[in-house]
Image (cartoon, rainbow, N blue to C red; front, side, top):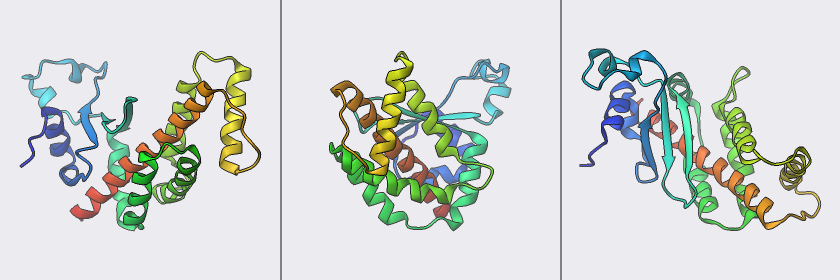
Length: 202
């Protein structure tokens, strides 16, 4: 039987469906620190023990580059509620795994587009968790670059997704786009894992 870290035990206690999370070998789950009084108390303090985790970090372990996805507790619950109507789990799982293993940026692009289509099931008119997350990631990857260079990389990403034109990129900028696509696949695998865990618990 797998032994869980104290953080994972707390997450499982707060969200029982997460006991069925299928990708434990790929993600390390921990509770994020918050500048909130209840979260700053000593571990033995009663409020700390009873407080529900507000932000959960999922660190992907299957890549040399550190990939971390943070999800708020209400977002985790919302994904769980949507899970019942989400389909095509086996197909997208196989495609994501292929994309994560591949070093071919065009294959990563193609599977990322498929992942985007699948993620549309985990959204509604008011909320799109993925788009907000992806915007934050590209902003982080472009930090420190000039406005012109950042705009050029974003144009290259759009052209890559549209499958139009030939891209002429430096190795550094190519690595940025590669990392961005890789993150999108990691993110989709995490959402898939939460959906599967929720469906098993139904």
